[in-house]
Image (cartoon, rainbow, N blue to C red; front, side, top):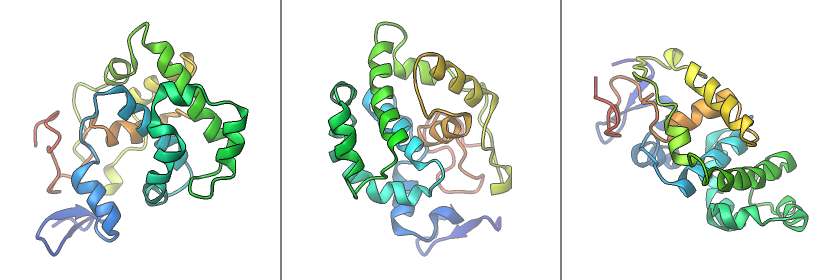
Length: 199
């Protein structure tokens, strides 16, 4: 078996990042790479990927329940109405990642999400960057951090008023919501999204 894959006690092969921490393993087995095609879910994932920038995903995942409480379940309409008092409230909340720029970007992105409804909508916009083929990495070294599509997605989102949507963050989003399948070849989750063939 590939050295970047670990065979669990359940006999299933997972990448090393998902093989040690039970929380990450559960996330990998159930959520990561599964297609999300509804606005609130994509908005939430976009925001959480932004909060993750410079940190570990495990940190974000552990704080996700509190994030959801603090940001009104990531309802774009509710978050778009947040004002300066809400920013200060969130800056004082130890249960989330207290980064003013990321908090303000979450509010900005809620407003930008609403603005998209009169045009293409967040779901169709993000999925329009699905590549013709998905990567098929065999090792972690083969997993990209950006792609032409994530660069284009980032540029278009910025043009439409979104913040904290750099190409690397958007590639992580594409992986997380099934726009690409970056499960390692040999992982038990490869092809599980139904978006891409298992090969």
